[in-house]
Image 1 (tube, rainbow over the protein chains, first blue to last red):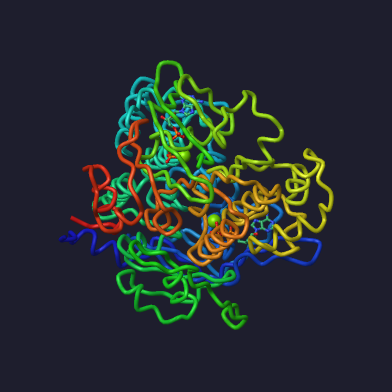
Image 2 (cartoon, each protein chain N blue to C red):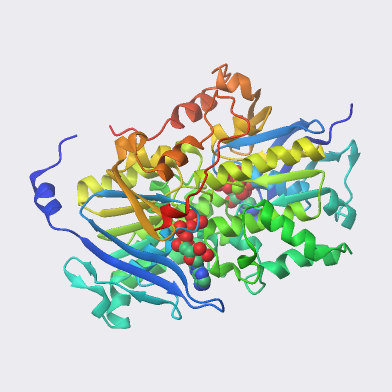
Length: 288
Length: 248
Ligand SMILES: Nc1ncnc2c1ncn2[C@@H]1O[C@H](COP(=O)(O)OP(=O)(O)OP(=O)(O)O)[C@@H](O)[C@H]1O
Ligand SMILES: Nc1ncnc2c1ncn2[C@@H]1O[C@H](COP(=O)(O)OP(=O)(O)OP(=O)(O)O)[C@@H](O)[C@H]1O
Ligand SMILES: [Mg+2]
Ligand SMILES: [Mg+2]
């Protein structure tokens, strides 16, 4: 697959710079540190983030998006998007970045969708908030987008409320809503966890094209090690709020950190009879 | 021997859309049955119909050979519990983990709540520190484990599991799957498991049903699937796709 020269040139300048990002929540028993000094840069590429449940993947994504809950404490030496320091922006300026230049597909799509608006209304509204199109054009674009994410019967789904669609349809509606504004950076938090494997690959192919053809930057948060290793360029492995390892995605099987190796070993495999599955022996030193 | 659960010619319409179209399967007591297939093919709707949350327009559902009363009785919910696909949606946003777990015990008049709640949380790998948190203060996987703990509390005989581990990382997934297998063995439980992960389904289930567009495509054993003894093109596509992403 030949990358164009234009893409090569843009690859050199980071789209996103994250340095020593920390997020903590106050609690009765002292602060809960969800993210503890995360640093990475992102170009026009597919960066995977994997890691233990509760290790801070979503909170990292939310901090970049500016969606950290207000009572949480967030600090960073640097958090910059295309050269703009996000930490210095006003809430209003931050909002204008959100959706338009940086978009995030949230985990728990059904919860994130508005329960009292139809799927179609939500997608067209998102589009109309960011571009000046008529209602009719917005409707056509929304239907096209639903079709692009492999929704079987876009016209029917367009008129349904979130509780009337299946898990995977809600997830794809969320993807359609985030892609319709054509963001430069997409943070996808478990975007395909509710999709059957064939649809999963079709949706990934769409994201893949956006990266290779339009130069979008993609942060792909997923538990699915097989998908991450076959789809992403690089992978960050998180444990207890920190990045414990970075590996080239296609070398995930050669990862050296015992946590990463343990993760790979825990997976059930078709045709293998491993009862019980191996589990991780978590070491306190991994969190240091 | 009668089956723990039998679904015969189940049909479910939403207005004039057939979400489930003449689907049948039997699950023998103590076994684990998988439902896999296309997104939107009706898997969750089948499970919801069993627990009385989706309107059935045709066919019948038998539990231990007996037809189910509509609405389902209180005793039914001690016998059959469901873990919903969308853990956020199924947890009350303004209830702490503790209240979420105490409620079913109160409804069914079960004492010894303190000990049962502590044990259920421990079983799913959540410590005491989580008891007084609200759903929005939990990660996706932590919420899912609360939902599993809630279903286990009532010690049901039949567990319907809708994508129970798709929000979990591989290590927690392994712990939860091991726990489910151990409980099934110890308590003679019967499972119906929906998952898009064929490796999880073949690991957990003896038999599985593949669905597409509301219909049953084929029923086969996990062994046959693993050995690629597959009867339909759709199931073959699923198997091919489960090896990962391929860039053209
Ligand atoms: N509002 C909050 N108050 C207190 N703790 C919180 C809050 N939100 C998140 N946390 C905690 O922060 C930690 C990181 O959460 P995060 O959602 O980033 O995890 P994650 O890596 O995305 O996990 P998962 O894979 O399960 O989704 C978790 O331990 C979680 O319990
Ligand atoms: N209340 C409802 N009103 C209208 N349509 C509904 C309703 N509930 C479900 N459906 C439709 O029934 C179909 C089957 O949905 P279901 O949730 O059972 O799919 P699924 O196989 O579980 O999919 P997934 O793997 O994506 O979760 C979908 O087309 C959905 O839109
Ligand atoms: Mg998360
Ligand atoms: Mg479903």
